[in-house]
Image (cartoon, rainbow, N blue to C red; front, side, top):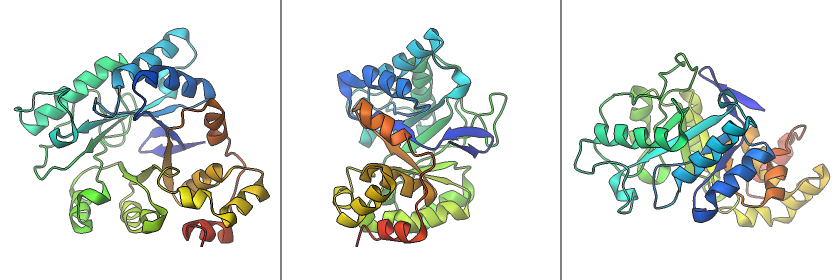
Length: 278
C-alpha cells in the first residue's frame, strides 16, 4: 500500500530508527527483509545512528534485494538545542548552511544522490532562508520524482497560529508529531494538514498509548478481525489519514505491522478508538 505525495510513492507505514544504537544496522536490515520500504531517520546522533541506517540500506542495494526507486528515505535536520555534542554541522554557521551541511552528511551516510524527504525538527525562532539542499527535490518532484522538503512542526513546539503561518508560506509535504490518544490523536493539527494538503506522520502511536492497547473494547475489535491491538491502532491511523511510523525491534511484530491489507475498520470501531476505547 502506498500514497502518492506530489508524484512520489510513499509507503503507508514507515520504519522508525530512533533509540536503537548498536542494533540499528541489524534492525534496519530486518525491517527491509520484512518488507518495509519506507525508512525514517535523522542526522542527530543523540537519538539515531544514521550512518548505520545508511549502511543497512547500502548493503541491501548492493545485494540487489531492493532497488533505490522502491525506497522512501526520510531524514531530519535537528537544531542545536536538540543535539548533543556530536554535531553534523558547524553550529556557528548560519542556519541555512547548517541545514545544507547536515543534509550533505546524510547523503554520505546513505551513499545515494538524493533522499526523498528532509524534515526540520527542534525549537527554533529563526526561519532558515528558502534554499533547497542539493539532493532534495522541489515540490512536485524533479528528475528523480521525489517529494519536496518537509519541515517538521511539532505541536509541542509552537502555537497553532504559528503552524498555520508556516503552512501558508512553505512548501511543506509532511508534519511529524508524537501522537497521543488523550490529545484526540492530534485532531486539530491533522485538520490543518488536511486543509493544506500535508501528510501527518504519527509516531509513538503504541508507546504513547499503552492504555488504548490494553483497553478491552480495543481488544474486542482486534479479536473480531483476527488482529492484534497494535495492528488495529496502526490501521485506525491510516484510515483517519495519518502516515504511521513503527519502531519495533521484533521481527514478528514487523511482519504483523505490515499485514494490514484487507483490514477495514467500520465507523463505530473508528469512533471507539478515536475515544481511546472509552
